[in-house]
Length: 199
Image (tube, rainbow, N blue to C red; front, side):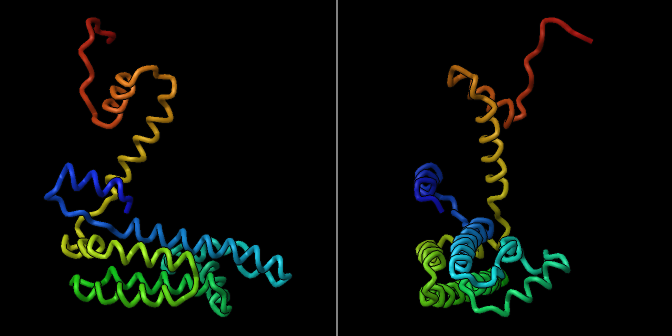
């Protein structure tokens, strides 16, 4: 969703279909929920209300099918409260229906309806997510045009490896040495032949 990244892709690979997959959307929704929950926990504490959201971070971020029995019970208790965090959670779960469609037109209708509801929610982090999703509508619908077969998981894994190599390479003095380290860690390059054999 990063604009600089989109520009590079458009310049270097103009024929490519850019797909925004589930990972990035769920990540944005999770950050919005977490932001609202953290603010609401502070507000409840300041107003001397019962701290019902305390320890509930992962309950709201996880999918219901991934909750343990104990967590599921705690979540069902939380759902009885009319809190912004709970409304955010319900909106996040409503959005999961988006990925079940097969055709871009139907998914687009759900996306538009969801964004309208989010904008009316008066919850600023969720409104920000709705604005982002609305502005990237066509890129989201490309997921269906690619029949849900493409994922950025490989790219994300590659980026994490690059970050790890970068952290390990602080002692390298030249860019050339850093690039060589990247190639050997990421490219599975063949090792050079040694003049001596050790075994």
